[in-house]
Amino acid sequence: MIYPSIDKLLNVVDSKYKLVHIISKRSKQMHEYDHYQMKENEYVNKRELGRALEEIEKGLITVKNK
Image (cartoon, rainbow, N blue to C red; front, top):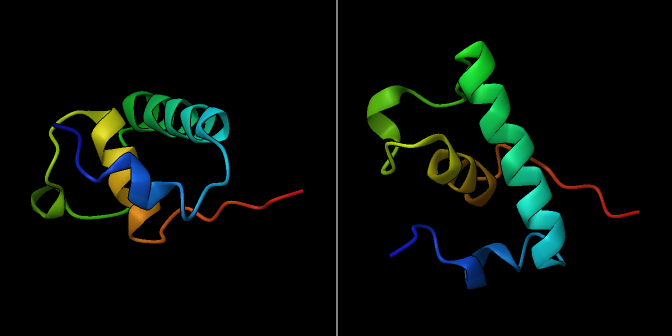
């Protein structure tokens, strides 16, 4: 099961497509630059995709709606 729930994240991001785009971009940044916004032990997920989802849920990534 995915943590955090997609339903919770859709309250922050208005579209599933935009959510996928943001998560993929952020996870690539994590992988390339080894840069995380939280400490390693604070993440529930071990992979970058899940960690990007957690950062959105915690408000560490802000989404601007145009």
